[in-house]
Image (cartoon, rainbow, N blue to C red; front, top):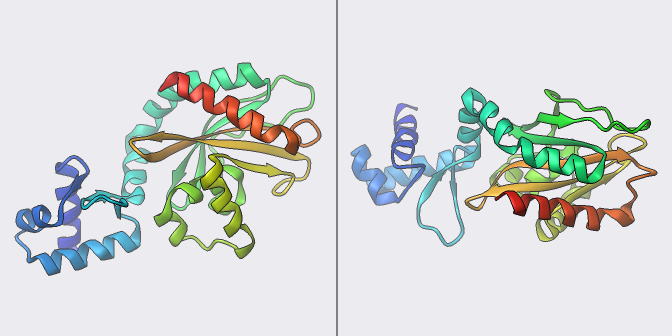
Length: 223
């Protein structure tokens, strides 16, 4: 355990990523031993690999711990203008969510002023498979998807989400409620997700693609 923690410290001091040989030399361990320890950390989600990249990177689980320890307020403040713009554009309830362990945590929200609207629930937690935005994270994070008990009936939907860049829900989780969610991606990693939620008779499936495109445009303008 202490050796594995030492490897995580090495990755952190190296800016979040390093090559196998570099890690083994700093840790004073053989390459095979270092490789085995890193593979264990990869399987647990604390370290990750990127396709076409020989380096090992800090994984989403350890990054989530760091975020919860002190980065939530900064992320909320930094992304609040994007959330406000989405609210101004749609007039519907909008929210910002992040991963918290193996759940989704609603970090911020602005509630619609329309008579019939979806209530905002900042601070609420839901399972990864229990919301459009949770499925968005599963579609964009292979290690998270690998360790989550994903029902067979949504596996195909996750592939569609990864391809199209947005997730949807039309009265599948809660009766009468629909939602569209898009990712906030930095340095190739999905750090957060934005969602728009509204009554299902107002946010109908034929509007999903167009709304997702608008949300992506808002995000692009703030990058």
